[in-house]
Length: 124
Image (cartoon, rainbow, N blue to C red; front, side, top):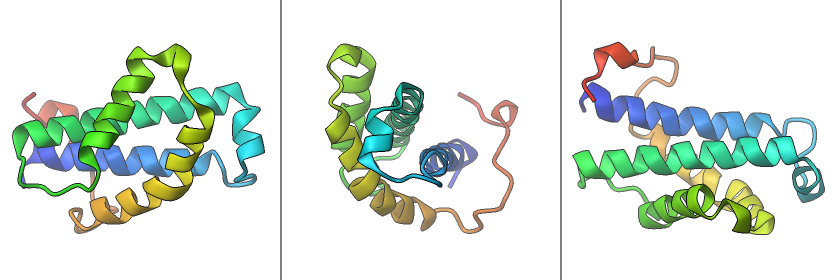
């Protein structure tokens, strides 16, 4: 796997871990729905995940990522329909779908602690 794809996979994994980090002390919908800063941070990370998957699929369609189209669609809805974001749906994604995506992405990254390729090492 080339560095570009590897970096995109790491971006997905890092965004998932960042989202999980927002809920270390309180993993409830009430906390999420009442905290605009956390909502925006989660939304931004979902945008990153969707864009990274989009880039992966443009470069190599043979990498199987479950629900890739739906993830990209969610990214587009957050980005372009920012005023219509449904927090209950986003919360469902955080609770139900991100753990599945995380385990799926980890299969492609041999050592989670390896250094992430630097941007300057990747030809975009």
